[in-house]
Image (cartoon, rainbow, N blue to C red; front, side, top):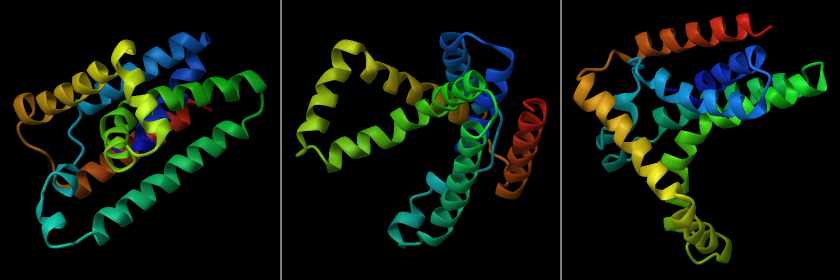
Length: 175
């Protein structure tokens, strides 16, 4: 599922829950609930053909649009009237996209930048805090949902329409 969809869910949660810890926890949990929905992007990233044939154009274009949507949601939260509401929205956005960050970006950063003191320190910090286990649990849950329970994905365009519809609904009800 795209980060923009998760972020929009975090914004929606922040409008109905006013405790920042609850917003973060519910937004974090919403990530896994939203991943139950087949979202049509399995073939974009899990098919090794694009890596082997160096066909990076399509995944990069999709990710740039997703990043633009995520930035739009973040700017909406930053520019939202009401100091507390904007902060709660940012907490919801962070909580909702954190599982993907932990699962995909952090291991890559650690592998490519292990020479940097900060990355070695963060990696050492992940063991006593349980973060490594959280990352493994997120990967296990995602694989379980998409490869064991939901054994088939929908076409990309149907998933894109579903996610755009979810974003529209989430943002409409968070006004």
